[in-house]
Length: 382
Image (tube, rainbow, N blue to C red):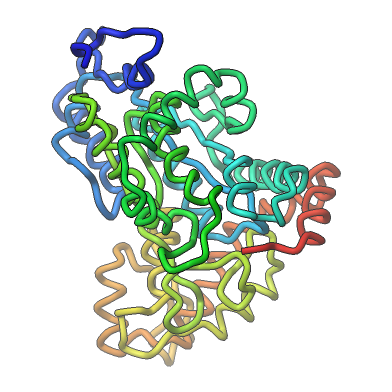
């Protein structure tokens, strides 16, 4: 094995060079500034592997590269639309550069949109339009949208040797344990393409020169695989895993919001009346915090977006109240002082305020309107 930072043309680990952290940054942040950056970035993740590595990265590298990605596979729900905009804006405000991987080839491998690459491309463009409209900060060039098919084809000589090296270093059961990243399980009847998928996604991390993998908890297994690969090739600097919380579906027992299940999801272009009806029907038992999707939306979406949460009530029912922290709201909900009948309309109103710019964009912009029309006409496939 070559020593650290030595490279040969045939060595697939060359693509890992970007994970080395430069120690020659022109300006070292003040201690307080570093702590603020760390808290901001760390706050995105439900889990971080590892915190000491993240702190060191933010101290030594002025513009860490964060990898995020998505399969273009149907209409976008609020978990994917609003939460990604919140997280990306936090990362860029902390000085990070974000590479958003439009995984068109991966969607094809996973048989999304029936494996039709032209439909997948349309869906990918629709996703970008939504993030622009909802307020993802795309100014200053700190966010890049990269199409996997184009990027891989342009640097195939780097990509495929890396994929093959990852594949040959891992047994089939280890790769199959990563099937969750595709919305599959080890018991599913997997195609050969779906076995290749985790090896490719693992390679993406290094191909994109990522310092941080900023993906959902459902993607953590393949991110851990990338760190294990670093161990295999004796690579010291590993990608940091920052796994964000997964918002549940609207109904009882739905651990994850599904874009293929209208009863589970609020879509980014849903009309105000649709949002109101969906929230009204959502599971929200009185005094129960655990497994309550409405409370999760308030915690992970409304508070980060607005900084507070306003509940409007009649004066004989306690009057209006502005909650400054989620803990205060949770305590009053658990005690029964805050009732679902008051929480739900306030949540629906907040969601509608967030979504209104998206509705306006898809109404007024001809290109966006055409993309939405085409996406709605497609039949999403699992």
